[in-house]
Image 1 (tube, rainbow over the protein chains, first blue to last red):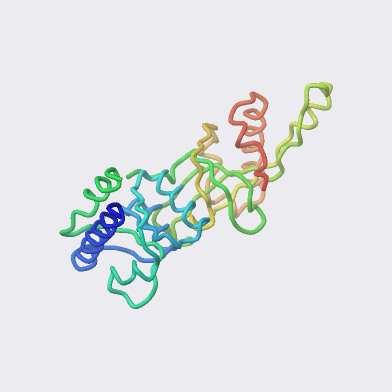
Image 2 (cartoon, each protein chain N blue to C red; image 1 turned 90 degrees about the vertical axis):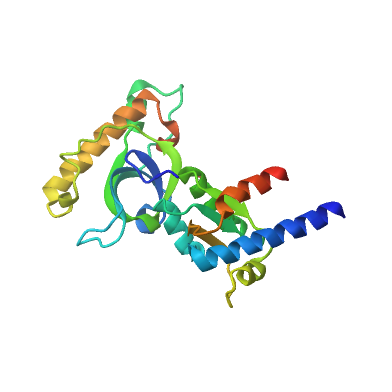
Length: 115
Length: 136
């Protein structure tokens, strides 16, 4: 019960950080573009949803390991992630190129470290 | 952040004839050029993998079975899958260049060079994963 509450709270936190990145920073949405950004070494953080297909997930994780880019597994599906990004289409994969005013890149490893 | 599309990295080719074949990056171009307006890499890879060699085989048979056929091609990054492996084979840069595709004699020379170097390395027994077929 306690962990559920904690998870919900952290999800809200992450969502708010996402919204800040959408407003002030640079990002790409979608598998193809994310892969391109990872290869070009521009991606600072990659976010995958929980219903991202396993093959795609492992491919992106492999590329991210090679590029030493962080990967965050968002605790929600593509619909939730798109809502967090204020888009009207579904997003399974997103990559942050420039965080803008948000501290998402610094704070996400801390949060995942907590768990 | 690290760039991983580098010299000497082993790549898996994903498309067309050489799909599932392993190749080594000889030269990579992150921004396009006029004839290839996309990020691409010149790779040298293995066309025909050598068949299995066991201890029970005689020298002649082993020599026959240690042949490798190579290919050299320019690929878009999208059609290559990077791996964590790298192979330190010193392919002669002055020979392996992009303009080899225009002249068939030059191309033959480049393929011979790649073949020799690959066979040499195969015989020493290093970088085994590069010389093995990807099985799935």
